[in-house]
Image (cartoon, rainbow, N blue to C red):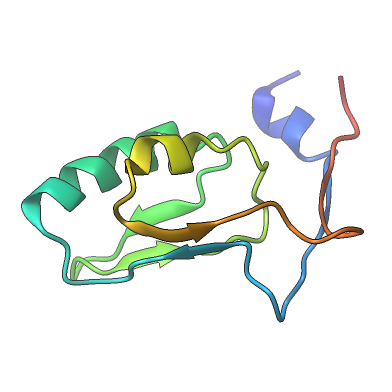
Length: 95
């Protein structure tokens, strides 16, 4: 079974009115772009990507709450990161 298939078993309860991750969307410095590229490669859910115009595409729905992006951000790029409020977030259903 592939990782994608295993991740497909997870269930997400998304708090549409309260994002638990807030990221900077544009005007990245060179240092922030280096950090952002590390986050894009490391996010196990693949939630980060860059558009052709250099803006960030990100959606917190589908977040596995591992905190990898928060650690790699080094206090930059990600403006706020916290766990979702109770009853929201990921429910792991495999392994």
